[in-house]
Length: 359
Image (cartoon, rainbow, N blue to C red; front, side, top):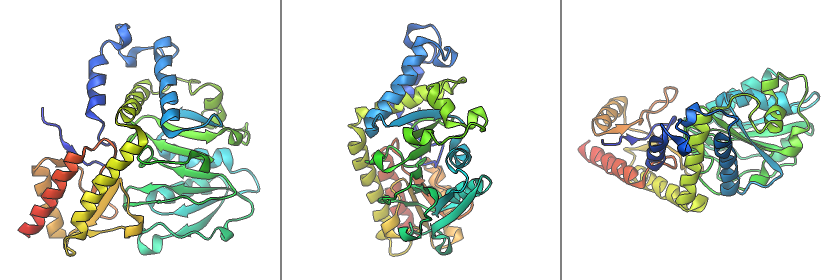
């Protein structure tokens, strides 16, 4: 069977090796005579998967014991609410940097919980860049500063993170595990798995233990981070198959040479596509400013709507999947997450060059 040239924004491409391993073990995991999906989440066999995923993530991202690793359901969208519910205490302000639709949604949910403010925004320029921050404007009573590390819709990405005196909270759903990271800069990181970590269904939360002491007892049990921390994310039945695939994906990252090797490949893939855009004499126009370009989501437009439609139609006929831009901005988008092979990116670059020559 021929695999699709998958450039979907999420759920996104998974490593073929991971899928083959899951296929091999689907009916009989670890000689249990059962699928992972059939195991009790209290069993020793599943416990090894669960704890192994945590340990592998801790190893790859060099996460110290000052941090807890939690597995939660509900996607990053639930974290838009859980972060302020747990950390935005009375008399404090949740500070947000707006860089796209997802940060807007995070702010919207926080407003339902408590006081909020916007430290910086590039909305007026249609989110073409990551804003410059004036940290002198950060409120003295800020509970935290929230950023969205990579913006799938607009194709922008933080190149470095601010050093702030309050906990830095980051939604890293679309670029976690794609590049080196200093975890110690952050109070809390959350990421839906369906871009670089595995399939949809599980959200990883990396939270500094000190912050768990601020959580409030009146919260519903399943919305309190302490519930997950105190029960190793096993208070209720977790998404066991998603966590299993997360573990296999993390093992795959290690087999590729770890984060540094993955980052090098991601830089290579991005350079190939942005090179085609920059050398097209304006035929392809990137949405993001060059100093804010994302290595995960390459967004671009063609000269007109007619060209865009034809480009996408021909791309589909040639086996490329998921190149439509987000419905809110249009154009095209190539999502080149960790599992997208360099060879697929080269094929897309050649297709883009041929289409331009045709035009």
